[in-house]
Length: 237
Ligand code: NDP
Image (tube, rainbow, N blue to C red; front, top):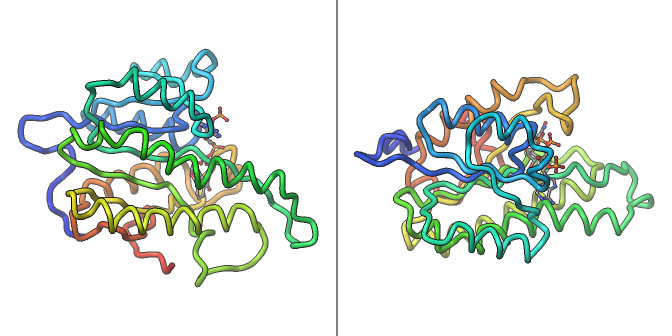
């Protein structure tokens, strides 16, 4: 990684970071650790009324369902004039887990793509004006190693494909927006103890997020379009 400068240390400015799916799991932990690193944080939740833990962090809380165009348009309007330095597309679902192709449920597959692939792209598009106002111009896609074709161990058709497609979307985004000063990066958070990862997962949200934020802090233009894990190791496509 280029290690240009810690993202929080742009002279005289406080970074504003928006995290989707911030009411639990990795997203909630992101909000907490970003705040403790001095960032202004906007955390979104599908149901802010039920997001007690997120509200308790003191972050700005906004409603957002990443699959809902009206919800997105309303968010963009409420944030009119606000700059966003870093967008973290974190919201996601485990989706279809059938091990066999014959069992694939296409309704579930549609949902998985709507949240995991189209969601991050919709959010990025809706918030582009806000990102253009920011100094950092960074877009982070929380993807998964399970989207790596080279590392494929089979099964989880919908989830894997949704993350592979997200990775490709980011690759094109990086090519287009890189010329305009953006850094668009895909990351794998590790196998994390959340509702999605389960209690038997390898690492806690605290460890995953600390690693991810250290990676984000070292990002520079040379990282545009790359795929890293939470320890900064490159993941094969
Ligand atoms: P959780 O299931 O704990 O949390 C998922 C979050 O996404 C919740 O806040 C949830 O909100 C939100 N979300 C789901 N659907 C939508 C939607 N339509 N609109 C807005 N928000 C939505 O998952 P994790 O924290 O573990 O996962 C976070 C990200 O990390 C995901 O993208 C996941 O694919 C990725 N990841 C996780 C791994 C792990 O081991 N945990 C491994 C690799 C990648 P709500 O509470 O309203 O449902």
